[in-house]
Length: 398
Image 1: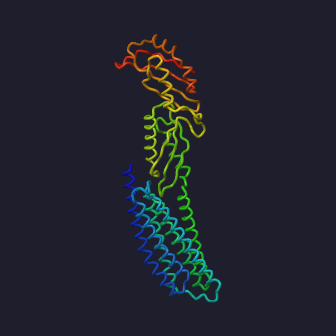
Image 2: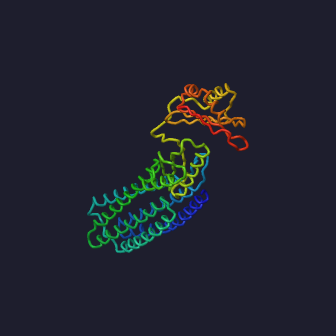
Image 3: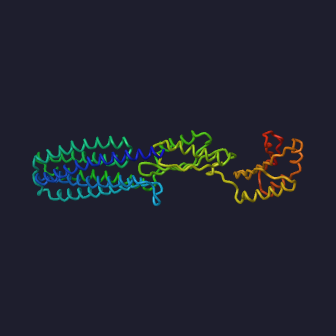
């Protein structure tokens, strides 16, 4: 299971490097062209789009750093790994986009406040805007396809960032067309729209990242899938207190499973490990903590101040010693209905059914139950070492 996670993480890192480097190269070329031609052609919208491309370069750098950091193995300071570095990167990316968008809006507002000073736009600005539009849309489709293949929220966010670039470039192209047609205020209006789109996209990314950093749970459908996996585990009677929290592109799961209240600790542990293994087959789950309950502790708890196991053993041994007996095994069940005690006597080859019946009648089980504050005490005999049962008698005091 761990090797599968490592392989998936390695593939995600490779895709992140490949797609991000492609974005870096393209944005560097487009940014240079947009700002240079925008200044030459007097197009504020094209210059604003160039600044947007510059922000893309910074965001690509953030993605690369976060991708490298999130791949680090768990250590003493980060026991669950470093997957949330990607979420932190998404938060910074969102904040950056909001700042860039607000700056664009401010600049466009200043230009609109002075309509008489808006210069005519050169045709070359339209050529560059169309080129950028086609390039950014192609980049978006490529990045989204790769991000969805490796199921990386950070890379998907970066891909949609590229789509916002394409959308802004479309607005810029329309603004330039309007300006060339004689309506010069359309160019700064286009710049303002681009600023709004960029700020809105940044807010969405930042808000989602903040929610994930605040231990946001998986959605209802994913949680239902995990519950189904737990309930499908043999020995699991019910599931309660199922909780999930995001860890980068993965999630941590905590769950309480209900098992038979009288099974052994080892069997309960085996059921819990089986349930955990099933949950980890869901690729969205990084790790799972399964708690075993004999009863639903969300609605029922054992009575307070029940005697400890050592106290129970001391009282039982003292009572049995009066008759020259000793217990071979003692099971204590702490349930919401009270304390149940199962006493198993050591094997005795000389004992028979009548002997055990007389013995059970002499032992003061009612008095022992009262001293323990128990609801029920059962008494039984082990088979002899040869494997032949010498007594099938059991006495129970209720």
